Image 1 (tube, rainbow, N blue to C red):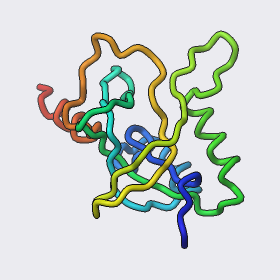
Image 2: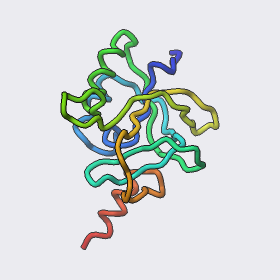
Image 3: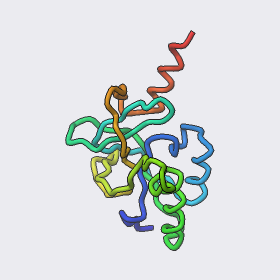
Image 4: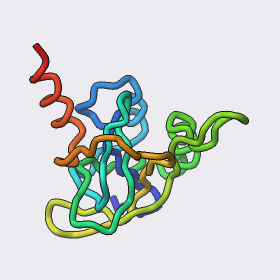
Length: 146
């Protein structure tokens, strides 16, 4: 199966399989896992959710690359994820994320393009997830709790 960049999705937070969020079931239903992957940028802890910011840096954000299972369903499937991520909010609500294409770094050293949800708000004063991996960050955080 040939993968087209406009039908691929990179996820780094609640949509990752290891996050165990109900939203992952939607990913599992419509997308096929391609590979663990990375994207250049910075990841922040916003408290209830992570926020990725594109940055010209050597720091990377750890995530997963997926491709739509049925190309004819992509527009509908991505619209559902746009809704989940707050891309097109109701009037008066804050636009939390914006969906853009980014260069995705694969484990074999190759690159591809995929859609990603970049945070659209202010990260001032929020802690950076130094590892770039929200799952590892949360596990470490929970491990330090009494």
